[in-house]
Length: 461
Length: 171
Image (cartoon, rainbow over all chains, first blue to last red; front, side):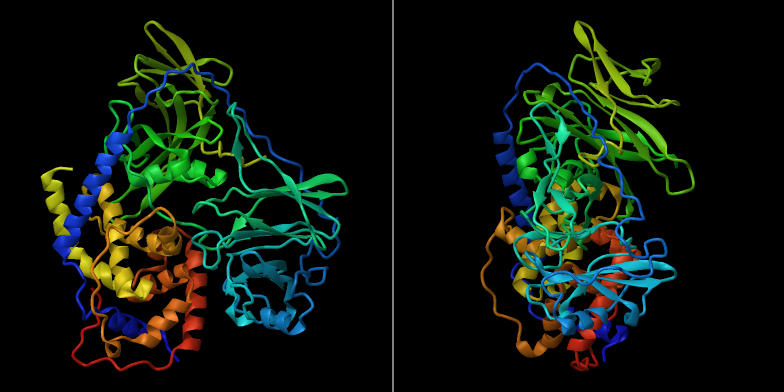
């Protein structure tokens, strides 16, 4: 039986490359440089469009959905959480041998329920392969473990596909699986929602930004069998995590939840190479910050870079709590509706590749907004590596001609003010601000709501 | 990109490419795909070379790009991403020099689980480093490591003996 040391030895032996690569190292480097020059030439030829359109800013906050169901519904020992009150469901629910084998599968997360006490909640075929949910009691709670595998997978070919998970029988649970980058082969993905028999399930695959810039979701009822919905998800971009669902119980929306993505659902690191649109920005921004800013929109909407056409409005630095600087970028992205989203994010990366990246929220503007004319304002909270408190900086960028920014409290009281340099400023303020007002000689004053990390697209709807 | 940047990039490629190819070979199980994967990772790194090299050592960056590009390999080949360019065929490595059993077993693992194995047991990355490279939690790395080892134990026998003259230590 192979152990860790033996595996290491064989991996090193197998990795040795007796036959040389087809191209030597210098030729490989030159091929990359030549390819990059070609890319730059194509991009330079493509960037030539500037539009001048009136700007109307409408940002509509997304409100949280229905209230959760009370814990005394749905039957079972919800308070103690020691057992699941319903029989197995799914297309394999009538295969006792399969269910017995699934109960014996590895349970990698702690605590580990005794296999004799485990119950199969769901086992069945889905558009993304076979999926099972097993639950079991441990330490006074009911824990769950999702398993996934290819179509027609034998039990032993199912792979644990979720991290630590507690289960309340009175509430639904769900998994999105089979998306690009996950371990399950196959073209499409699937969403599995496990609710109570008789419940209705509504699914929204992704957040949508309408022509007027409002963020919303289209929930459609889906078929259920014994309270389980198995829904095919269209191909989505790597990292997309925007699916949400609602459970309707006794005619009332009892739950509105996001979906747990299966392991590895699209963690692809391939940030685009962007050049700041506005002068004064860092011409070589941190790719981790760009990646984060792009994901703030591509994740909830399921739209890829090719569709969103990201434009780097500005890039620079904000102070971190440990005395260093974090890179920050402001992207403008155009949605299929024509609406424009601004997404601000930071990255604080060390030379060894470690670091922190985070979002500063997304603002939206109606269709017809010229990207070059957008005002963006975001509050970035940069955590430190020590115990220092997060440091909040306000990042504001405005079109040429604007010379000054003033922060406003939620009641309209004035806060910190600062000169815009090349149309951008990083402002520190001891109190929370909600709006940024930019002004310039001969230009109308413009006010922009300040986004924060909590302003994630379509989270609460 | 200045001539000086290009010179630094060439130096970086000369220093790192052999190690990248070895890792890519384990990830893909195929010499040709490994070379294409490394070339893609180098191109993606070069796009941000000024920033990445300015921090210090770009090695961590290119490795992150390598493993995440690999996990999306099938999708990438089927969509817009292309390998840098076509390369002439080359004679395959003699079969008796490969640990085909190991490479075959690795190929049965889902791409990201395979990446966890390679990073943990070939590159000797910690769980935290592996999680960071793959963009997932440490708990997920533990989960996938456990499952991968169970699967490999099922599939692998004792394996070929290591030639006594071969060094198998860390890079």
